[in-house]
Length: 124
Image (cartoon, rainbow, N blue to C red; front, side, top):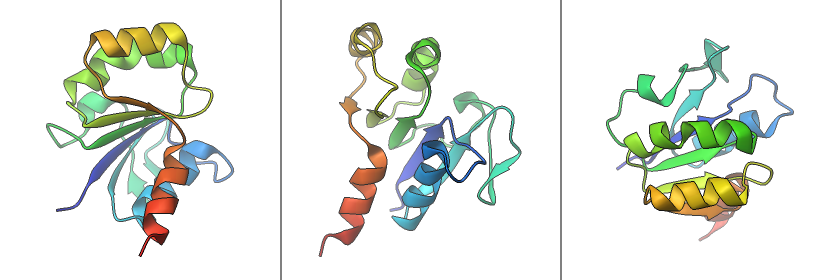
């Protein structure tokens, strides 16, 4: 079964982590849903304006590359996707955001999802 990931803050700029995440997750075999309201596509993959617009009813992973002030406003939308895990990448986390995510029952991981998929991909 193919794993799914939504990349919040996916970027068309290849130097940005939101773009690197799209590429790393795709290389690791994920079906990737880039979320960027200002892009039609990221790395040749159709982009979506919001999590509400993606086709699956649930998603395995949501990885966040947005400032905490933005991320906290999207927690209800994230919870509505019923993700198995939510990755708050460095710079996207903050205590009040973590507390709110916990109240919603989200399984939050504060770490770099790019490192996670690159490490997983290199395992025997």
